Image (cartoon, rainbow, N blue to C red; front, side, top):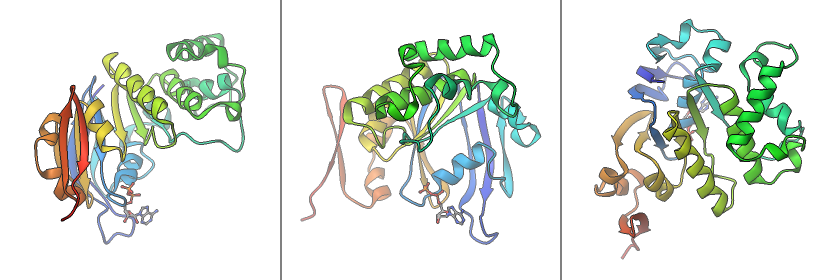
Length: 257
Ligand code: ADP
């Protein structure tokens, strides 16, 4: 599934553009990481991609169809949002959480049919957590909750997955597992767009990295290209040396003399 952004321009107050003429596209099988300093516009970009905010100029298209012409239900069949892992105050069972992702449950209050329940179990099995189906989500570990969020997105049957800092609240092992799961999903043909502040993980897991600064897309390249350029230092305004060790990138902030 292809997601295309054409000249996306958005302002909250009608004066300052928080997104300023962003144009790019995301293809099936790509694992794109979006990097940007705090306040760069990543969340605003995601909200525009999900149709939660309407751009003043430009448009978002999926397989050639404009999002502005689609209903919530149609959009949900195209794009799924995976929020940051967090401990919910109210808790449903794991199965109910995943069922809430199935499209028939979105914008309808009907009870799930056998087909949806099967779909939910298939999604849980994909992440090897079918045995958690009856558990309340607030009794799970952070890593397990992240897997439930991934299963819910898969049950939604959208081809484009938008991950908002998927590793931010996880221990190191679960961060690596989550990124491995995202990579596996892209190998199955999903389009993954992932925001993170972890530069090293971006370089090691993404197939493509885009840098957002002041609402503009200022760089779009493979991790290898980015690692070998001096751009990261100017982007973060700190001297960064990227070294390669056993096929992995390691980012080293240089001490200021
Ligand atoms: P990021 O996710 O990269 O940290 P955001 O998209 O949250 O950046 O914010 C981009 C800019 O838009 C910031 O200057 C922020 O203050 C502003 N902004 C974010 N949300 C709102 C809002 N609801 N109303 C007004 N300004 C906002």
